[in-house]
Length: 217
Image (cartoon, rainbow, N blue to C red; front, side):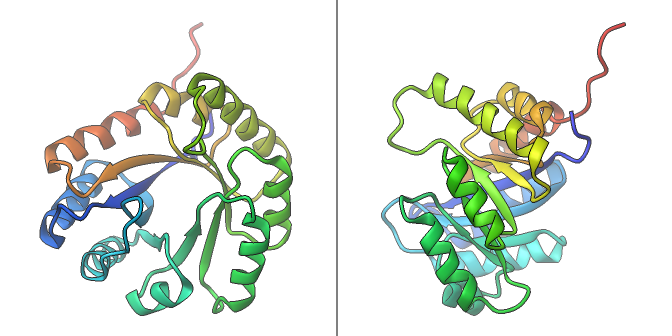
């Protein structure tokens, strides 16, 4: 297992929460364990709540945590985010190259390649700051998808130096397996409607799962 495997918070803003509550959830998560990065995304089908996003970005940056948004470059710049995350799509390579050309120097751009080795290599060669392997929402066989994700992370870690992030990780045990396979970051999914105590507990479980466990002698 790589000792460099870090937690990446995948934080969804739900319309049912206030900026203050979302901030309390984030603070609890940050206090529970070290987070390397945070992705701020809106709930499916909704627009990014700018006031909440701005509050969360400020809180993350105050703690020296890179804050990305699942939104446009204009939104990222307006909100003061450190970067943008592109979710998987069938046109992800084209979308990334277009975004990369328009991005300001220093803007982090991460890309979810889904389960495509070709797309992952293409965006890496085009300058992505990290490549993510997740489980696309339309997938029905989650067990097989998890096995494929492990295989992709293992392949990537053996061949490429650009960091990879494992998204859609559903348990601490899965996080442990992905870290052991070579993931640089493992994403923990929380929502702004979580209770702060629940968020902290989840982060601690995943953090513990990423710790090096010495093989039995």
